[in-house]
Each structure stands twice: as C-alpha cells, then as structure tokens.
Amino acid sequence: MPFRETLLNLAITFVLVLILVLVALLLKQSKTVPVAMPIGKAHTTEQAVKNTAASKPVNTGLPEFKVFPKAKLIDSKNNEADTLRILPAEGEEEGVFTLYFVDAPDMTLTHPQRVQEQARYFEASQEGVMKTGVEATAYVTQLLKERPFMLLTRWEPVPDRTRHYALILVQVGNERIYLADLLMTKGYARLAGLTCELPGEVKGIDDYGAHLFDLGKKAREKKIGVWGRK
Image 1 (spheres, rainbow, N blue to C red):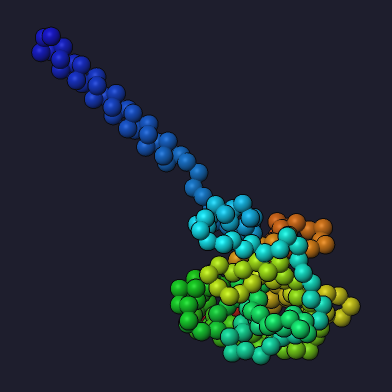
Image 2 (cartoon, rainbow, N blue to C red):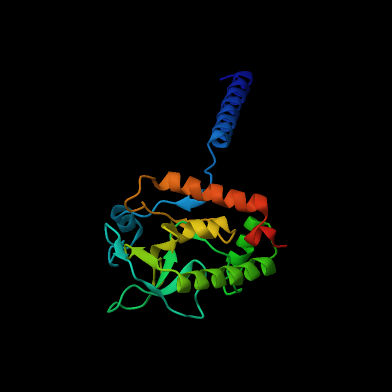
C-alpha cells in the first residue's frame, strides 16, 4: 500500500475515533441528573429483602397500623420533638418512636453533620438550630402531657436502631391533628425522612407530603420557629 494511502487511512480512522468519543461525551452530558427528593417511600418487603443480606432477618413491620388510643409520653433526656419515648398502653413495653414525614432540629451536636445540614436547610446558624430543637421539644412535651394523643405504628424499625416509626394524632379541641402538621405549622420541622400511607385517609403519600410542604412554606414566610433564628 502506498505511503500516502496509508496516511489517509490513518487520518480517517483518527477522525472516526474522535467523532465516537465526542458523541459518547455528548450522550453522557445529556443524561438527566437525579433530583434528591425531601421524602422517600417506605420500603416494601421485597425492597428490603433486596437491600439486606440473605443471612439477616428482615423486619419491615406490620402490613397495617396498630392503634393505641391512650398512649402516654415518658419523660426522657433523649426525647426530641420528632423522637419520643412512649408507653403505648398499660401492659405494653415502653418504646422510642420516630415520626414519619418530618425531621425536627437537633438539640445537641451529637450528630454534627446533621446539625450542619439542618442549618443549611433552615438558613440558620447551628446555635439557632439547636436552640429551636430545645424549644420544639419543650413544646411537644407540654402538648403531649396536657392533651390526649393516639399512637399509630406498624412497628417499622428505624434502620440500625432500637426505634420504630410512628404517627401521632393529638386531640386539639374537637379535632385530632397529626403532630407532624403541628410541628411544620410552628416552624419546628422540615419535610424529610420516611413516609407511609395514612391509615383511613383519602390523602395519599404525595398529597399529604404536599400539604406538609405548604405548612412549612407558610412558616418560612412568617419567619417563625427555626426560620426566625440566625
């Protein structure tokens, strides 16, 4: 093969390879970037099995909520606005329950990364976040000591902890209101964490999530709770 023809073939090959590389780069850049959502769907049994080693037992909770209409708050130094020690009923063991749907400000720097994340989200200082955490916990403690409340749980465990997720319905006047609603309304929480289907409710997960988001947006506009901290 003549030298000129060999050079021509090499040049054509180089151009083709360059085109393929450019096309690959363009395709990579055009892919949709995943958007982090503020809340996630509760795991199903099938999902949990896929994400857990086969040798480990899987506990995703009961298929339906168990209702404890006369639950009682137990005083504990570890109580926070969204994580509480509760006696579900006489004869039952005390347990620590974390609310579905919401995340309240931490009271201490036990988990510094989470406090930093909360500070960024609420546009407040870490000190402001922790002060609000103390304030929110005092509010919830007084509320649940003074008013009847109902605990609803599927005994779905918080990963790697001895806590379980739950919903809490508080008697306010003639209504029962979810504690998550009250926390969002007062600027004491953000929409985050695990979600669930609401028992006996017409609203689905997304509708209730949107409802909580609106409550949080109003609190932010009014600069109340953590939104008023610096």
